[in-house]
Length: 338
Ligand code: FUB
Image (cartoon, helix red, strand yellow):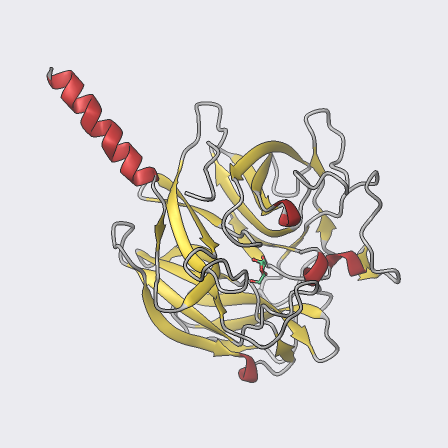
């Protein structure tokens, strides 16, 4: 009897941990990048706002103008605390609009906020802003990172190396480049050609530049064939994130127009990566964007959806839930509409 009771109690606890929850109700935030600094959980999101811009093709309705930082003392804290605005569009000398998905990393006691924004010519570039504290304020560099383009920078520290992963299709402009150079036609490859890859580069010692030419990250199917451009269920679209679990590198990303979060694995941070499967089925809303982090020996998925705004794609709310691996390191698929 005792055993049965213990099992029932354990199952209900396990279930409640799995259930997703919203992290903040007063403002719309999206694209959460999570990091633990000084025993505190910090959330670095985009800040969604109402806008007059109607531009679903180019994503102009994601018209964000500042960044906030949120924090949680621990994972049990029901709601995150908003620590306020830490960087404004008007304080970034080179940027004109659209402060999209950011990320932050720490090196030698300094905190580096990486973010995409459109410059005055309408091209997305990646910028850096620096602070002495994880909660900001952050001060932007005068110019974007030399040679940068597209969106969604995610920084991953591996040993002493810091790598930035980036890229996003359509509104994110990745299709306008090939081999790190502007590509005249600005189109994606044909359906039967290899899909465009997310990019990655080692960061320089001062964290302000690429230390190498950005490289393509190859994502292969189970037969070792690169995913094709027409494979919308599996090919990379945007919102890349990297984490390491049991010495394996997990590259996860959004499939964009099929609205899934999926992942691929490799033995190196440069890949090639082998496609594995879905992490999250489509959420309410067009975009899906996430980070995966270990906190107190458990793994969590942080993401967003548009349920609280009644399905407005550009007004998104932060969510989180526990994430589970099976004994072979495969991530258990979760329901986005939960
Ligand atoms: O938040 C604006 C854009 O929407 C992000 O950069 C993409 O990843 C998508 O979530």
